[in-house]
Length: 310
Image: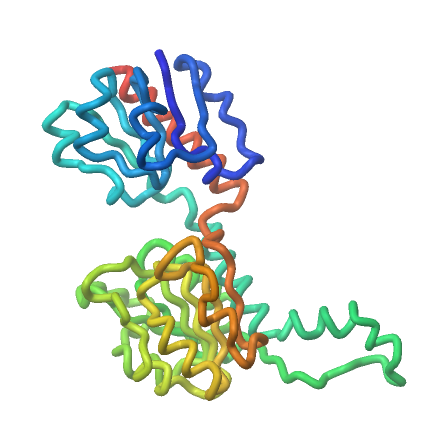
């Protein structure tokens, strides 16, 4: 039986695909363009895809295809209705990256809160060797303890971040993007109150009609001076044009792991802000600790086993 991974590069170069050899012949392509999809799938019975789109055209051209394993939680890259019509099983993976995303959230917040980039550069540039005293405190930094931490989207990941933030001594509140989430462990507030009163705000919500451009100019202007905003949810929840404008004129600190268009477009306005020290951008890595990716591959293997049992 032939198994094809269409975009194996998305798993990084430190993940071993040998576990799939127990099921058959595994062929891994680094990437697959739209025009290469049918050629790469060929006579495969099982395909693995992270972001490669599998639509009606592909399914019709690949008669042996029986199982589509999405190496992610989202299923929007597969035509689920047509797969059902064709009798093709589609399986995704959920819950593998909770700890990784929560940790990345804390990494971004702690770096912004502690001005780590500035102090690291101060030392490595040799400036510390030229001072007359043992310390250097030209940039103010803060503790999480006692801060008000707002969470946008109190799902599985949001709850994990709330638990960690509480352990640091933060006072956690949350905003329900769906309007239906109620959790008695934390105070539920409106988005307006969150933006006006929170010292740290982290986003853990999906992108949909209710969350697209949820944080735009009005919300940025409501934020407290020196407040921190981190988005590890989905690009598009934050209006990046409005952010570019506000971050140049107001002292807020922002950490982004996701953008509206990925990979980042050339000459993106956020690459040219006047205060780069107020902004950290990472290339959609929050989900991808080595442990999370290994767990993801393990669960994909379990999905294949379940398919083969039937």
